[in-house]
Length: 253
Image (tube, rainbow, N blue to C red):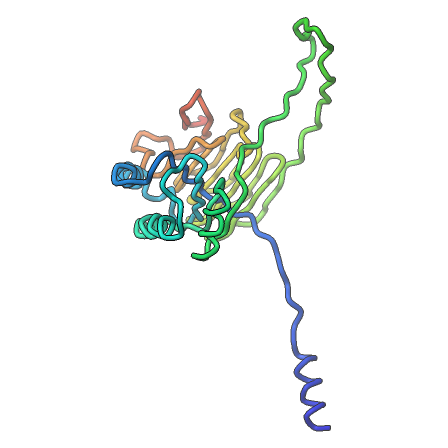
């Protein structure tokens, strides 16, 4: 009777388990050919140029065009070389069955091939389509997605994601924090962390902030790190946008 009562009390004291999803930005490292000394030398050069780009970011190895990764030992040697460079490798993608099995044996996840999400094409009023043999399908204009509004500071270690529209932050974004949006990003405060706009490929997206001290700015996959922002980079009331394949930063004044 006493034992049964103790068991009942133990069961009653167990709290429910909560499982919550969280959005993480993973960096895909694409291999072409065999990851030999020349590859590692090139990687070391890139890491010296942008040492903070990979900081605290999970890394996925894309093996679609890789060669010579045909066994657990091959994959393990590659992972050890990358982790020696402080890259947080969590898995592989675009691998075959042998590579997926090897990944599982050394504690990595095997993911399906990642892809960029293309923008929807929309018709422009007053512009007639070119003549064609068949009538093109009708394209429906989608209403703009509502912006996500954050009215509190974004602390270090936090990630805020607006998966459809703009992201508006009324307050600062701390170092080590990450703000991500499918559209534009507006920060009414100091930006010290990472800001990634147009993550679905929207090259017209922009980043606005009251004060710029960012670890990284990225628009549609093109980025600039703090090391690439010189003393001539505007710091107060600025916007960042894409001019071709270059990310530009200018003052709004």
